[in-house]
Amino acid sequence: MMTSHKTEELKEWIDDNEDELNKQTIKTYINDYKRFRSEMTGKHNLSNLPQSEIINIVKKTKYAKLNMLNIAIVFLNWKDKPINMLIKYRTDLRENRTQNAVDKNIEIIKNAGATYEDLMRALDKATGTDFLLFYLLINYNTRNNDLIVRVIDAKDSEITKAENFMVVGKNKTSYIRNEYKTKATYGTKTDVIRNIKFQKYIRTELENDNEYLFVNNKMKPYKQTEMGKFIKSRFKKYLKDSNLSQAVIYKIIQHHAEENGNVNMMKNIADARGHSIDTAFQYYSSSKYDNKQAEEMSDNDE
View 1 (tube, helix red, strand yellow):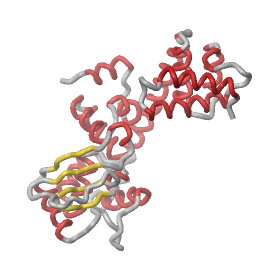
View 2 (cartoon, one colour):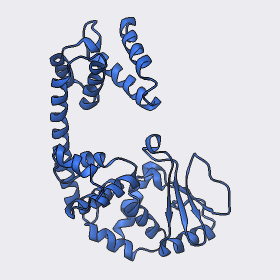
View 3 (tube, one colour):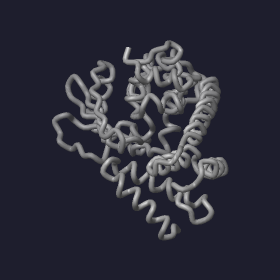
View 4 (cartoon, one colour):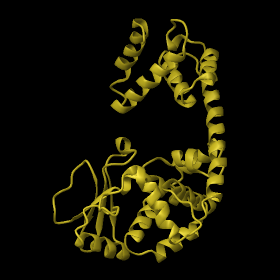
């Protein structure tokens, strides 16, 4: 439990910053601050710690190192204290994390049992709900929770903010995502799908009065924890040696875009998934970009 003087430092920071930051950011910073305090000894305020001591704490922490370092930078910067050592250490941590992620992603792609071309062939061969599943995973880079989706007629007015929907019209379908991982940051995502094959199969689901798009043999929607097994099994029907999850599929598509130097594709798939292209570079990339290259690609609209 934080003692009163520690609480005062945090309270003062909140008072100074609550008008400039959104509630979710403040909540995240408060949690990170409390974690950092739990790793400290003595009665100093975080903002009074020497940079060298902060780095030692971060090196030994059981929590996410970049989060811990960032909150220290925030508090020292707030008090106009030097942060040059912390910035350099953060750069080193990011580069190490990026390289580790690249190595891991390369191995994952090698073991996927499928290439980008295989994904496209499976999509071309698929029918019914298999096609609908593959189309959403490949074109909208969905996570498991995004695929728990209700199917309704465009004439209905059942749309709420609590679920995902396929709103099916005569010639198009609106895919509305209210429940997905980064909703708090990006809000409701709505995509209009006009693909003829997609429209054919989604209308079949509507006409069969299926309330949810992907259901088990009891006509109940797959839970988020069950969706991974469902995805893997459906792809194995078309790619028998594949080992595919939503995350692996995304990494294969990201890898294809990187191999072709297709920055627009990288931006589009990051946007469809609901995160920044910087996140794509840090967590999903199979190519090593230094900070300057990543920044240039993030800013490049060509």
